[in-house]
Each structure stands twice: as structure tokens, then as C-alpha cells.
Length: 271
View 1: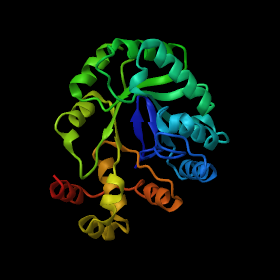
View 2: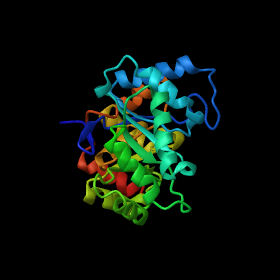
View 3: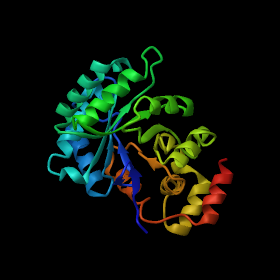
View 4: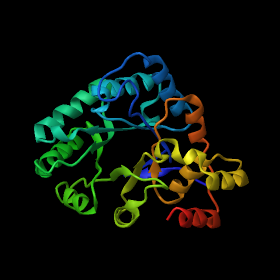
């Protein structure tokens, strides 16, 4: 079984690493930088080579940690996602934000650049015309959005017809399935990558008895079952973890699949 997902035309690891909170949250915190760099490096070495970050995370410091972690890795072996904050969506602001992210990441290009949150005060043509220029200039390879519903996603795609958008990143998990009504089916139909943040609901699913019981059949944990369910549902989960054992556990959700019966049982249980 080929265990990969597609973003645009690129094959990426089916599970990524979310980096929110690494190196601080809304403010930089350098107190555990070596530990964070080690965690990101470990994730890449263990097959979680899709790295999700943003300029907002720790005011850019998280991007710096990602950059340090992948310095010694072949560039083509990692797929880096970053995001522009919703207060920086005017055309020139987007371009400047992307260039600043590139400096912090120490990269010549970002694989996927997302609008982090929509901003109704700024016309969509502003950030998306900037995204097209960034693609044309080779500074980003793909453009996408985050936290956009179907209607906003459709409108956004109309503003970048030449390159189109390739992904929407939203909250999605076994315990939060609102996106199954409209957004997930739309992304499946349109071949857009559906990237799921908070896929383990901050650890809530890890102690779930039903998932643990199914996990025994596969010699897997409840968290691994929850992540594999997401994989089986055509999504790319990006669990955030700073701990080596949790990263190892997340990596163990790849390379196998739930049976159709178990997938259906889980879907029904949490539907």
C-alpha cells in the first residue's frame, strides 16, 4: 500500500506535524528551543515530513525553529506549510509576510502558503493576487487557505484561476465532524487536500475506551486508531506534539489501514 497523500501534485507524508506552541504561542519563548528542534527533527526522521507552521506562531519564532530543524535535511524530503496572518492580507503585506517567513525558515521557497484566517474587511483578490505573484516568482509552490467554509473557498478559487488553490486546513477530528456536511465532500470532489488540525482534540481521544478496544485488534493505541480513521477518510491530520514518545506514536498510525468494518463502526459511534 502506497502510504502518502497528495497536495497539488506532490506526494506528502500522510500525517504531518503541527508546530503551534513550539517556541511560544502568541509570544516567543526560547527556554526550550533545543528540545523543540530535536522534536521536529525526530518527526522528520520518523516519516512525519509534512511540517505545518505560521508567521503568527510565537511571532515567527516557531518558523525559526522549523528552519533550524531541517537545515541538515535534503530540501525535497520535507514539505513545509506556512500561513499569513489575517491582519496582513493586503497584497503587499502578503508578499512581505512570505518573504519574512522565508528568512526565518531559511528556505528559498515555501511548499504551501495559506491564508490563516479569512478577513472580510480585505477583498480576497488582494491576498490571492499576491499568492499568484509569489508562485510566479518561485517563492511559494502552492497556495491554499485555512478556516474557510465552502462558499468562501469557492470565492477564493475564483480569484486565483491560473494556479488555483490546492488545500483547505480546518479543525476536524472524530469528535468534531462539522466539516463532513459540506466542506469535506467538496474537497474530495475537487481534489483539494483537506488538512485537519486538532485531530486528537488535545488528547481527548487518547483515553477513549471504544477506540482502545478496537486498537487491541491492531496492537495500536486509541490515538493511532483515531488518526488512522482520519487517513481512511481522505484527510491529512497534523497533530501537534513536542514529546518524542507522542511523535513516535503518531508515526505509528501510518503504514496500515483500518478494516472497512472497523472504519464504519467508528464512524457510526461518533457520528
